[in-house]
Image 1 (cartoon, helix red, strand yellow):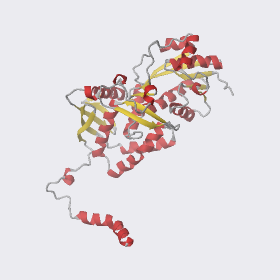
Image 2: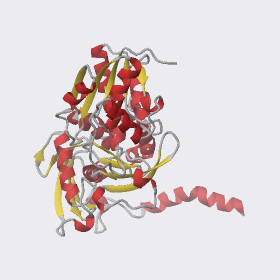
Image 3: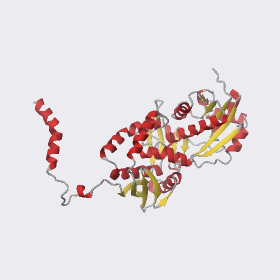
Length: 400
C-alpha cells in the first residue's frame, strides 16, 4: 500500500544514490523534499550541495557541521568504554548514523515534515541504525526506504534514471568498492572486496601510508586524559574534533590503524570490510594504558566483560535505548579517576605504550617491587593459595 507522504526530510550526500532518491521521492509521492547533509569530517566537497539539491528538486537544504558533536557525544563516550566490535572494528560508521538520524528528526520537527528518508540498502546495517533512531524519537514518523521499494536495482538503472531526469552524475570511473568516511575512519566494502581471499590494493587506502613505506624513524607522542577523555596532544589542548584529526594525521603518517575483517551484520549475513582508523587506534591504546594505573581491578574486569555487549548495542543501532543509557552511566562512573598522561611510540604500523603517569594512580612500586621491602609479607601468600585451592583439593579427594 502506497504511503501518504506530504513532506519528507532526506539524508542527502549528493552522490548518485541520494540524488536519484530525491527525484524519485518527488516523482513517486508528489511530495515536498527537504535535504539534510551532515559534515562529519568526511572531507568531501559540500560547497555545491545546496545548488545541486535545489536543482534536483529540493524545496530547502540543510548542511550542518556536526564534527564536534560527533566526536564529543558519540566517539568519546564509546572510547571511554574501549568499545570494539568482534575484536577489531572501532565502529566508525555505526557511531555516525544515530547522530545523522537524530539531526534529521530535529529538522523534520522544525519543518513540520511527516516523513524521513535515507539511502541505505535493504541488505545492510545502516537501514537499521537510521530507523531505530527515527522511531525512538517519534514512534509515528513515516519512513521511506527507496532501496526496499523501487525497481532501480543496479547502478546502470540508477544512471539511466539520472540521465532521464537531467541529474548530474560523476563522469569518473566508479571505484570497484564502496566507501564511507568521517573524522573517525574510512571504510571500504563491496565490489572487489567481496572475495575474502582478494587483498586490498595499496592505492585504495586514503588515511594512511603502507607500514612498509612509513618513516624509518619512530615518533614519540604524549596524550593527556581527563576523566577518560583525551584533551591534549604533545602538550597542546585541542577540541575533540581537532584532537582526533591531529591523531589521524600523525597515525596515518606511520601506517597505523588498518584493519581487514569479515564481520557479522545485524541482518544476518557476513560482510568483508577494510577500515582505516589511525587516530582511533592510537586513542584506544592510550586510553587502556591510562586505565591500567588508575582503575580498580574489579571495576575494570566488570566493565571489560560488558564491552562485547556495549559494542553490539552500537553496531546494531540501539544508541538511543535504555540499555545503552544504563551501560554508558556505568562506564562514565568508572572513568572519574582516569586522568593523566600516556607516552606512546609510533613506528611502521605499530603503536606502543612507552610510559604512563597520573595523580590518581593506584599503582604502588612499594608493593610491586622485587627488591627489599617491608609492606608485603610474602609468607601471607601461602594461606591465600591454600584457601583458593580448597575446592580443588576437595574435588580431587572426593573423586577417589
